[in-house]
Length: 140
Image 1 (spheres, rainbow, N blue to C red):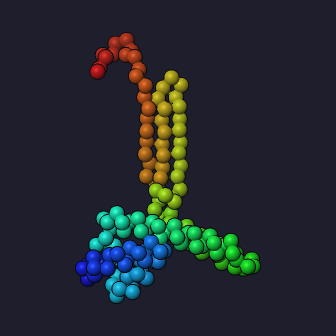
Image 2: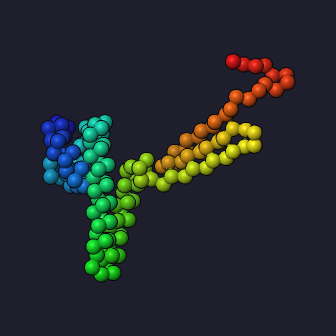
Image 3: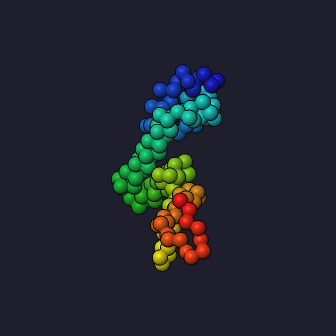
């Protein structure tokens, strides 16, 4: 089964970059999504195709909102867009996930910055060269 993903790699990547869901591509090849993702998960082209596919789905849903002829169609299209955005946010949090940044500047002290992307905090601290205080050794 794993060889199937390798043999059909180009076809899988093409369909994913067109916005098709992995489960539908897998069904067309008579396999499961986990077989495909287990084999291709480290392939950068596969990852990029999935990301492009998410962009395509978001774009299609946004266009559906723009071209909706009546309010009922707008409501349906809006829900489709929310679903596509929800999946994109979870699959690619670094691109579409919620981001928070907290910056705190201490008087005469370092600048602390905490960035939270996809529930993963990254802390930065910019400390200037501080002179030694009486009684401290000067370390180099």
